[in-house]
Image (cartoon, rainbow, N blue to C red; front, side):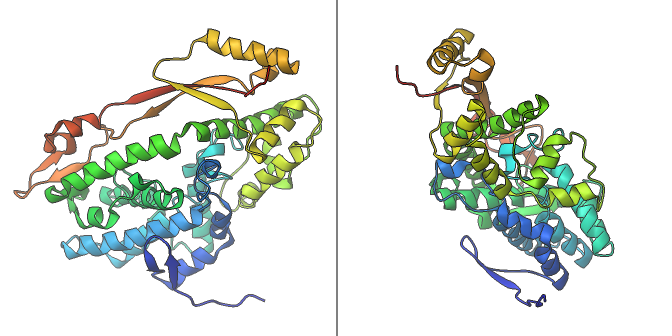
Length: 408
C-alpha cells in the first residue's frame, strides 16, 4: 500500500533547505521515472579519481529546480513578466531536463542506445509524463524544445549561463573537493535580467561571469577531462563494444534483462508510453555494475580483463601531450602488449588507443549579453576589455595515449 507523503522541503548539502513548489511537481518527483535518477551517477566513473563523487542526477535535478525558483524571483523583482503557468512550466522543464540520462550519464551516451541523445530521451519521457498528467507539461515541453515564443526561458534551461551549469559546477565541486568549481551561483542569478525576451547579465555582474567561465574551464581540466577519468570511461565503453562484438559472433554473454534487450536491438521505439521507453526506464547504474561482475568471469580474455580493470581500479596508464600522438608510438605499445599477452592486434586495440580532448571556456557563437547602465547590450568579450576575457575564447586541445602497465 502506497502512503501519500506530504513532504515539501528537502535538505540539500549545497543550498540547505529547498522546497518543492507544488503538489503536482511533488508527484512528478515521486514518479518511478524520476526516482530512477537516484540510481544514475552524475559524474560517471569520476569517483575512481575523486572518491566522494557518488552524487546522482536526482540531486542535480532538484538543485537546478531550486536555482530556477531563485531566478524567477529575481526576474519578477525586476518587472519581468512571468505568469504562474510559465513559472510552473519552467520548474517542470528544468526538473526533467536530464531525465533521459542512461547508466553512468555521459560515460555511456551512444554506447547502449546508438544515435539517440539524452535530450531526445528526456523529450520522450516528458511526453509520456504529459499524457499521464493530463497535458499539464505541454508548456514545459514547448520551452524545453525551444518552441515557446519567449527565448529567455529556454536560455534559463540551456545556454552558456543556465541553471543546469550553475548547479552542476557547484555540486560537482562540493562532491569532488575541487574548489575551483565553487562558483557564486546566487550572485550570478541576482545579476540576471531580460531584454526583448532574451536573457542578459547586468554590467556589475561582468566579473562574476568571467569567474564562472574560468571556474568551468578549470573544472574541465581537473575533473571532467581528468586523464584517469578519461581512461576509465574508455574502458567502460570498450566493455559494451566488446559485448556487442561477441554477441555478433554468436558467443553467449550473460547480461541483465533490459540491458540485454538494448544491446541486441539497434532501433528501439521510444514513442510515448512505448514498451521500449518503459524498458529504458528500468535501466540504471546497477545493470552496468552487474554486467561488469558477470563479465569479469567470462571466458573471453578481453571482456574479462576490461571488467576486472574497472572493478578493481587497475586502470590503464595514460600520457597527455600538447601534440598529436604519433601512430608509431601507439603501434609500439600495441606490439608490446600483443607479445606480452599473446593477443591479436584487434584484441590489443581494446587496451591501447589514442585520442584528443577539447576545452573551450566560452563559445562566442552563443553569446552572453551584458546590459550596461544606459540600457545598451554588448557581447561579453567586448564588454570585458581585459586580456583575460579574450583568453576565454581560446580552444585548447590535449592529446592522449592509453596503454596497460606491463612488466617485462
